[in-house]
Length: 397
Ligand code: PLP
Image (cartoon, rainbow, N blue to C red; front, side):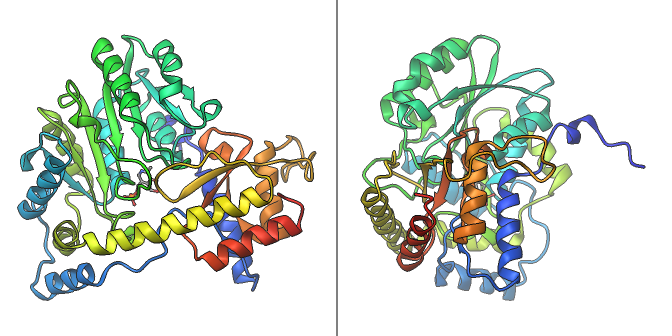
């Protein structure tokens, strides 16, 4: 038998996978599932990006690149960051195969056994796993009682962080809530980070998908330039999930240190994909705007539909997710397959949603927010209407 590492045994498989596996199984059996559990835009990658990728392949860009990325892409990323007020230079960038790898490398670079990492709940699933893989200890601040906003939770954050805190993770716009944190909230984070000498990850992967709010890059605030690790990626803004492209930006020694892990693990991001990334950053504003407007319409549609059925939602101003409060009265007492533990109510609700209404959503517990379900509105208006109709017909709303 294998003797698994403590590190790997500390981590559970992604709770979101349970639902998507179930949805896939049911679809394979011929069921018509409205899948609102997905974390990817439902648009094709814009043509100009696809063409740039093909041209790069034809031009023979198929070998390794320098580990941290091709110079034109690092330069385009630095320029993009400077556009949002971040003091950035091309040699402070590592191009990674996806934002997830960028985050993984960041946790591994900063966190030692026992270091404290602070998360703002509901938090994207992988921050917890990445903390545990690095040996860190979690402290959490719950934004759910504050309509998922950070500003009203700053007092709690102040009580939570201390000189022992190593790292704080900020994700605005947020997955799973869609919340966009105000500039005042980010200034609050800045004050605490400076006071207690804390490094902050700013995961800005949904930055281009904002509605009635403005995205502020944390590293652009006074005092944050030298303590922020900005992580971003191409998956969401440019509908490029399967291309696997993202990046890290940080000042000082960070890139040198994280670059060691990068060079010993992935070597580099895919060569021709990096060339497509240059095109994405240079020439794709129109497509990004079209997708943003499509998401905005769907968000408004969903809010209206939920409103009609008396479901009160704290709607965010970004990303393509919302968290709806779920009532488990229809499904109370459901227990897991082994029968020995009662399920968190949101898990029972999500199971009923897929089993009875053929609608897939992710239980809030996956994000440390029991009592909610995450709905992704990366789906057509018709499918969104269908989903709400089915949930209503099955007494789940
Ligand atoms: N960060 C957040 C908050 C996300 O939701 C995701 C994807 O779901 C990622 C990072 C990673 O995305 P990717 O690795 O596709 O760039």
